[in-house]
Image 1 (cartoon, helix red, strand yellow):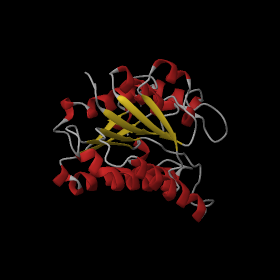
Image 2 (tube, one colour):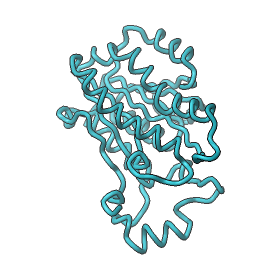
Image 3 (cartoon, helix red, strand yellow):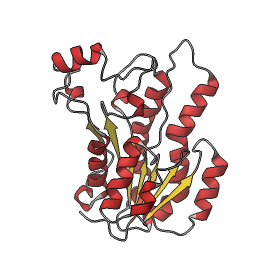
Image 4 (tube, one colour):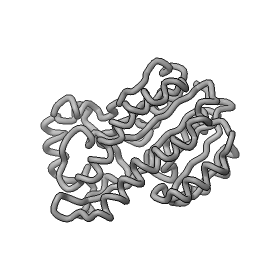
Length: 250
């Protein structure tokens, strides 16, 4: 697999899953531009001259507009919409501000980027869009209704975008991670979800998670590489669950 001379635009590349995706594309010779509200690990710059980092708030239409203007007429081979925030809100305690912010970051900011840059993607021979969902989009979980709704909306967006962008031959797919070890695996009470008794008892001992372990960010990055490669040229409008089989046992 080789992404020589390809430009990959990735949101949320400063840490976790996004960082692994950035590193993976760089390892396969791509030119990577990452958009993140946080600073990216500077050590990456020491080893990869093909990496550019842009600080951007995806909830700010003006910042998105300014970035897209700076990128005018430049080819994008693959867009990976990975950035996301988690909100521990339930039906009793969320506010309109909470809802607007998480939808802006997780969903609407990515749609605005795609709206503005779809012609850049269409210039490529690859023409790939990959959006990050979650298995939380498909099943109810307590205490994260807003997050779950944004991820369900992303899965709907994948289906709609693959139709809307068909004339430009752009394929659109989604990845839905399951239990992945990132900073989001820290629960609202500050504990690691993989160290609590519920996870060990239900998902490991009772084999609700057939693979028997949590995943790593690299497990998601590997699927992003596949979807961005020519091997996935006929995959379109699909959500790929990368969850160790947990959704098979619900």
